[in-house]
Image 1: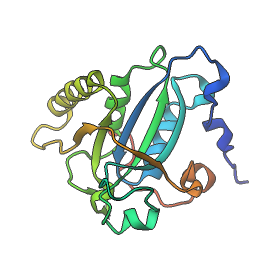
Image 2: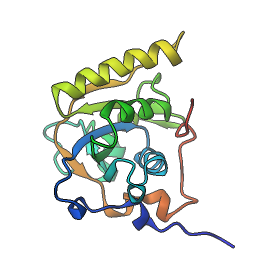
Image 3: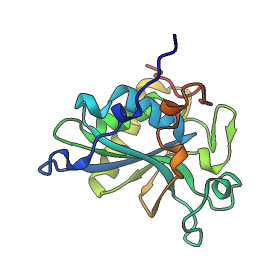
Length: 191
C-alpha cells in the first residue's frame, strides 16, 4: 500500500499568528527540490519547529534577467541559482541553526555542482538579508570548515540577497507531490 504525503502538512500560513516576527533565510545548494525537501522533513511547519513557509525560486542572477523561467535558468545564461527561501520564526529557531543544517545537507566543497547536476544554477550559496545574517553565516562557515571539512575547502558563496523570483508552481513542494521524482544524492544529512 502506497502512502501519499499531504503537501499541506509542509505549508503554514504566516497569518496563523499575526504577532509572529518572521525573518527570511535563502540558501542555494543544488537542485532546489532536494533543498526544500530536506529542510521541510527536518522542520515541518505543522510541527511548529520554526519554519513558517518555504518557496523555491531563482536569485543571484544578472540584473538584466528578470522573471526568469526554469528553462532560462537551466541554460545558464541568467546566472541565477536554484534556491530555497525560508520564512522562519527566530523565537523558535535561530538563523545559525538553519545555516549549519544547510551545510549538513549538501556538498559545499564543489563549485557550480552537486552530484551529477552541473552549472551555475547548482552552486552553493547563502544569500543574506542583513549584516547580522552575513556575520552569522561567516562564523558558521568557519566553524563547519574546521569541524567537518579538514583537507577540503568550503566553496559556498556568501552574498547579499537580491531580487527573488518564485519558480513555477509545479516546482513548489515537488518531492512531496512526486515522492519518486529526481533527488540529487548529495541532499542528505552528512553528520
